[in-house]
Image (cartoon, rainbow, N blue to C red):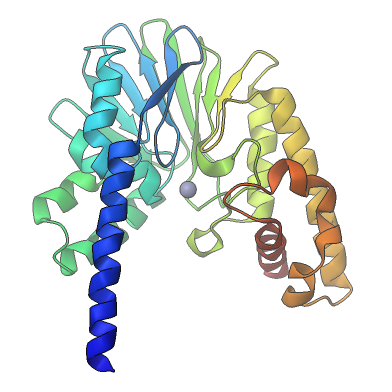
Amino acid sequence: MKKLSHITVVFFLFFWALGVHAQDTEVIIKIDSVSKDVYMLTGQGGNIGIYVGKEYVFMIDDQFDRLNKKIKAAIATLSDKPIAFLFNTHMHGDHTGGNASFNDSRTTIVAHDNVRKRVMEREKQKLAEQKITASFYQAMLPEVTFSNDITFFEGEETIMAFHEHNAHTDGDALVYFLSNNVMHMGDTYFSGRYPYIDLSSGGSVEGLIKTHKKALLVINDDTVIIPGHGRPSNKKELQTYVAMLEDIMGKVKDAISKGATLDEVKADPTLAASYDDAYGGGFIKPDAIRATFYNSLLKK
Ligand SMILES: [Zn+2]
C-alpha cells in the first residue's frame, strides 16, 4: 500500500510538471494600452501595470517567476528605459512571484510594510525547504516600504500609492497615475467577477468596500481602472460593483442576526442570486462568496 501511494505521488508529480511546462509555453503576455503612457499586461496571475515615463519605467506587480522572460520581452516592446521601480500591490505569489528576477541594480522594489513581512514569511519557508537560494530569497523582498502612502514624481506624472487596510489582505495599496488618470487597484478589485477576500491574510468584506469607496472619491468618469484580475474597468462599473457587495453584505448580516450557520448561508442561493450570472463565473463561485461574507462578518 505504501509503495503504491509512492508511485501515485511520483506519477502525480510527473503529470503536474508536464502540465506546468505546457502552461508556460502557452502563456502569451497580452498588452492593452489604457492611456498615453500606461499599459496593462495580462498573462497568468495578476494584471501588470506598466508606466513608461521620460526617464524610467514604473512597473506594478510581476505575476510568476516562470514568466519573467516573457514579461521582460513584452515590456521591451514598449520601452528600453530601465525599470526604476517595481511596486507590489500586495503579497500574493501571482503578483510578487517575479520579484527576484526583476530585482537588479537598476530596480527598487516598493511595497507596504505588511507585504514585506508576508513575502518574507513565505520565502523563508521556501528557503528552509531548500527550494530557493539565500540570494534569491533576499532579492524577493521589497527594498523600500511605507505605512500609509508614498508618492513618485516623474516628468509630468505624479504617481500616488496609498495603503488600504484589511481589504483583500492587510497590505493592499492602490496606485493612481494622476496625469494619465489610471488607477491600478490590485486585488481589491476583480472586474466582472466576485472578489477574492483573503481572510487568513487580514482581508475583510468591510475593508474591501471601504477601499472601493475611497477609490471612487479619487477617480472620475474618465479614469481607467486596472483591476487585479479581469478586464480594464471604470468608475461606473466600480459603483455597480460596490452596490452589489453592499447588497450581499446586508443580506448575509441579516441571515447572521437570525442565527444562520455557515452551511445554511452556503446552501442559500437567494443571498446573492441576482448577481451570480454576472459575477459568479470566475475563481470565486457563488457558494464561496457567500461563505466568505459569512466568515468575515461573523468575526465582528
Ligand atoms: Zn491577491
